[in-house]
Amino acid sequence: MLNLFVHGTVTEVEPIAERMRRVRVSGPGLRELSWTPGAHIRLRVGDPCRPHSWPQGFLRTYSIWDYSPEGHLDVCVLDHPAAGPGASWSRRVRVGDAAAFIGPKGRFALREGAPYHLFAGDETAAVAFGAMLRALPSSAVVHGVIVADGPGDRLPLPLSDRLTWIYRPGELPDAVRSLDLPGEPGVAYLAGEVSACQTVRGHLVGERGWSCRDVVVKPFWTPGRRGMD
Ligand SMILES: Cc1cc2nc3c(=O)[nH]c(=O)nc-3n(C[C@H](O)[C@H](O)[C@H](O)COP(=O)(O)OP(=O)(O)OC[C@H]3O[C@@H](n4cnc5c(N)ncnc54)[C@H](O)[C@@H]3O)c2cc1C
Image (cartoon, rainbow, N blue to C red):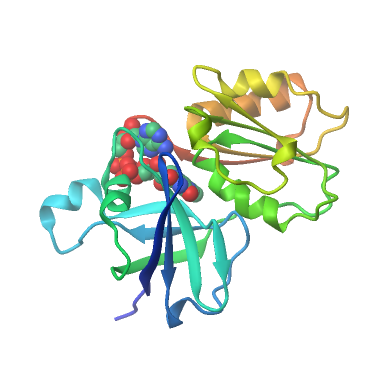
């Protein structure tokens, strides 16, 4: 039978922010994977052999924070209050555990030749943004806003002097509206909670006159829905 899963072992687990754990998966099967910054994996966070867990699903989607072709990749998992199988996995996972995932996959990726790059999203989006920002030259023109619960949620992002973190109850669309952006459109990368992404996209297209093609959107989660891909 065709095995879609890449198998490895958990070799590092550490808090990377107050509510987020970085988990490294390593192994020979992870060498020379094809990926682009912004891509994600579908990680096995439950046991498919336990039928009582089926209603929740046993795969969850996580962006690749960093990858080494020598055979390891890192994901960063938010421990959010509703804690489904993904957040629960991040609480119990230990060095030495087996890990399996599908991917890397996804088309959330940098656009070459953009006059400037605008990143907007929440703390989950910041993981994908980290990989994308690392891939940009230091001369790249970058703007960005990330919304989180508090300063403890901040991830160590490259080019961080060009990004603004705001804290709830502050809202992402308001923060993007107040950004002092160049007159002409750049390329926007929007990710995180669905309705915030939609509102920011509506603002860029409807109020700033950007073309839909200038806005790359990847919804990551929405209240009440499990395990979006
Ligand atoms: C392409 C892609 C990349 C992603 N990358 C990351 C990543 O790098 N790191 C990361 O932590 N997440 C990431 N996510 C989001 C993550 O897959 C979801 O948050 C997922 O729902 C978490 O699974 P769970 O089992 O913990 O909760 P689920 O069982 O899926 O959901 C239970 C409930 O929890 C609530 N919920 C889900 N996510 C959140 C949240 N972020 N904040 C508050 N409440 C929430 C919802 O109400 C949901 O109904 C990504 C999603 C996609 C599609």
